[in-house]
Amino acid sequence: MPGCRPATSCPAIIVALRFRYPSGEMPLAREQRKLAAIVAADVVGYSRLMGRDESGTLARLRKSRSEHLDPVLKKYGGRLVKLTGDGALIEFPSAVDALSAAIEFQQAMADANHDQSADTALVFRMGLHLGDLIVDGDDLYGDGVNVAARLEGEAPAGGIFNLRERSRCRCWTIASDVRGLGRPVAEEHRTLRSGV
Image (cartoon, rainbow, N blue to C red):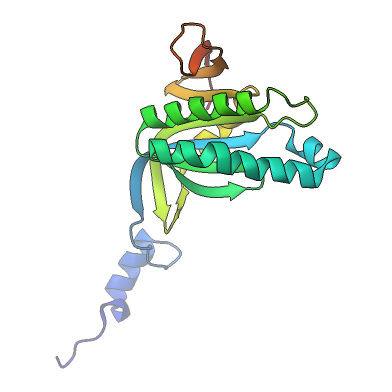
């Protein structure tokens, strides 16, 4: 149409955009989000283990992933989002499945470490959080990931730490089959206030 010009060249629109977006840049398209359970896992004392035996530690780590983690993920519908050296970020569609998978994996690792010395055993700590996530291709970002990572750092060796409610955390450790259930039993051994 004669006399029409692009909207972004109109002074009134530019002023309105600059007022709303001071940098002058238009906001990015809305990101894709989803609610999911996130598990952050890490090997306790990995640097020490690598310092003593790099090749052996890496071989044991690969073996634990293929023999213990991968089957548990398949069984409970988990998706390995990324590996971070000795750690992993895992997504589950259900918090119940995430906790069940974490318990089963920790039990499998406890069994695998039964005949290992403390100098060679791979012991994991895990943090679990149900939260809103930003999806970027195959990767996940956001506060849900950050909280899971912080909870993992608080978990004891061989334990699972999860946020129960906004200000309370639960820590689970793997116990022997004291009830005769024939499956791993997780015991809640502390509930505490958290600043997470």
